Image 1 (cartoon, helix red, strand yellow):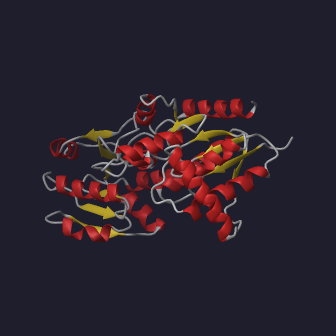
Image 2 (cartoon, one colour):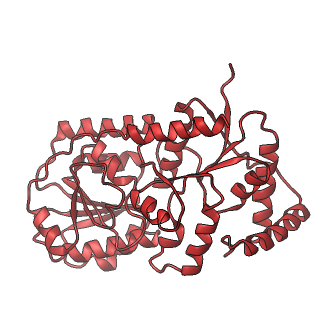
Image 3 (spheres, one colour):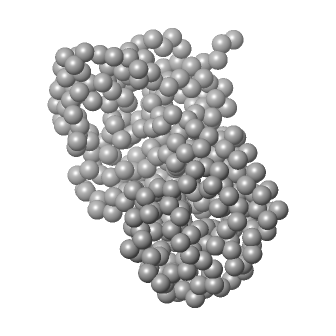
Length: 358
């Protein structure tokens, strides 16, 4: 019997290594296949004439505005491309009429699937209108309107489940967990750390992409808080764009390392004492904390960065510079590998199978 095909509009192409968004897309891709489906990514290579793109796009702009879907920065050509690409792909489908919609930044693929008689499962990577630090009530309203297109919604954090419920959108929790290939990389890192046994004086690492405004602001605040701590270890800041944080570096032991390749990053993480995850606003460290714990790296996270981690143990959470300082003076043991979130996977599995049989 042929494996049923499940068409999907993911946020990113699945990758074993990469940023958090790519890792979440990889998780979704693997979970779909574990549920017994073939995950068929919408083919984005098909070409259309500019006339087709603009005619369909102008129609969609009017539809989006009439239904309060997000329309900021939408250009008609892009909307037309999303519509035509999704429509052509789904018209070729001969199996189940179920559509996975992860890139909820755009409403057009979900709307197109619904017009063709498909049920839609939404898997938003974030509630995007709330991640900027300057939330707009109108953008939030538009995002809710788009999410209501979905027949089922799975959120990456329990806080989002709670928040959407208060706007009468029922959703389920599906926390991040790395793909099997990704897990092997993390377990290899844990083995390296067990061999090296980093000391209490080993560096503290702050990791992230400083080009991302929430990450940058969190790094700046973390460095400011660390100046009020009785540091006994150097601080190493690692990631794309972190070179631009040199003006924030005053009077701290350690260095800004900047962008590194995957092998160098593994080397840095194999030698560090612990990882600090800190955000002043934004979506939290939804992939980084779980991955660090699987790698055997102790994690200190402020309350915002720790969002959506209630299923993880051995996480040390602080909310003030004084609390951070107290944690840094403690012995923080190697975390045990966290349990995989099988309960939530089973709910996802059952939902897909139930919807595909309708």
